[in-house]
Amino acid sequence: MAVGSVLGAGGAFALKRLFAAYSDLLARNFGHRENDPLLVAGAPLLLAGLGMLACYLPARRATGIDPTAALREE
Image 1 (spheres, rainbow, N blue to C red):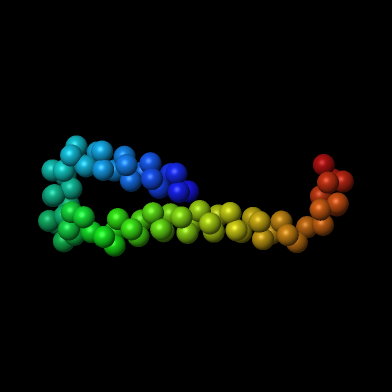
Image 2 (cartoon, rainbow, N blue to C red):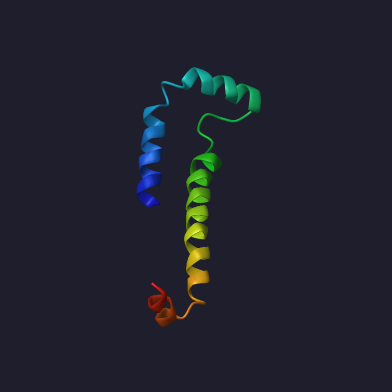
């Protein structure tokens, strides 16, 4: 998740000039600043939290299964 966040942030900063005009239009319409710190920090944290949740739920369900029974079935 960390590598994906770093690569995503790098890609976003690299494409910033390409989408500058469109971003300016959206910023005027929705009232957000160009470098909103809440958005810049919050989006990767939200994605990391969702990734952790996606890993936690199957792992929690797997702890309820007897390992020897699971190995015997396969």
